[in-house]
Image (cartoon, rainbow, N blue to C red; front, side):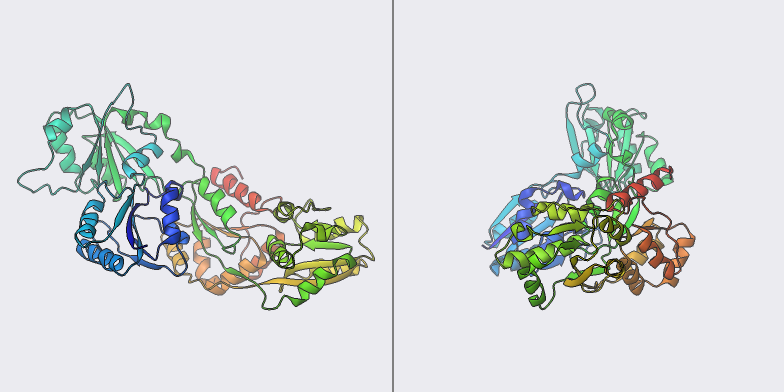
Length: 507
């Protein structure tokens, strides 16, 4: 259906996007987005959707507003469903109404999807409630982008300065001296509490508190630049007490996640919930095989195997996909004993109705062998569904112990087609503090994209390399580096724990 949806993307935290906005992004033919609309949202778009970036960054517009209007009209009249993604709310200093008027004039249909405005969200994350029975019973939203050299101001400065409202200025950092002066000249006391919130609700979130008199100078001293909000009023006094977001233990810490995109979501969410800035850099691409006939034959003869050993979640996923295509389910494994190399793999099996007979205490192949030997694997027939290319330690050691092992590829891994420039830029501007490696393959593929020579200067300056376990650490050593951090239990939650310990200085 031809329609333009003017969507508020919220203030930056991906969790604040509305359900309706996400549903529209999933269906849209065309997505037109701004600088302040988090690019993470683009993952919800259809793979064949046309994605158009139009900038709008502090006066530096990739596409001027009139051209954006023309673009929206053009796409709508072509019969497209268009998602116009704007930071914050489209009708709060977002020029959404202007775009709606242009669409109406051209005869195009539109709909507004409100978003969480940064004026509310950014102060809330900084611990500043805009209203409070003790301090303020009203709020004013004001543009701080007004030209101070205009002969007449659009603002009633006397009302703003003498009222009891909380004042929230958008885009006011460049005009802070002017705003401060106008408020004080019109009756506001110089010691009125004032705060700046920069990149509110995102992992780059920062805030500072001062007075309306001193905040222009303090903003320069502390390097506050756009995009920042200015909050003025007695409610700012509550910031130190209620400032929950800035207490997140990994806030502002840049962490590179090298896991395959299909596997990374859990680690990314855990780190993001703790405040980390996650740089998703999948060095591995998980791909299905071109021929599953060998797997189908193995499934048809499952009763001839004593043990099935799953060494990864992906092994479970691809094995199960083919099992279901053949019209089978967990009952097909009724005569088999099943082992999982770790808790995530075990959980993947349990979700499919199979509860493993064995999960080792330490999640490496060597521990699996020790445990299976105690369970009498000698002389037994063992099937290992796994990646086409993987470590040979497990099958070799089982063979040595007298087991009859069959390796069954169910998926393959390849080098992800990623450019390392974003990571190198993050290293150069020192916004990346950790690089995590969760398998030997992530190490090998990382260094095929970013050379050891390029990484070494940053390691020398304090960049820390994190390995999930000793096998991955040994692979890292072959590239000339030592793991700075490694969990005791060789799991993804363990990786998160060592990052927390290191960030807090307790490791």
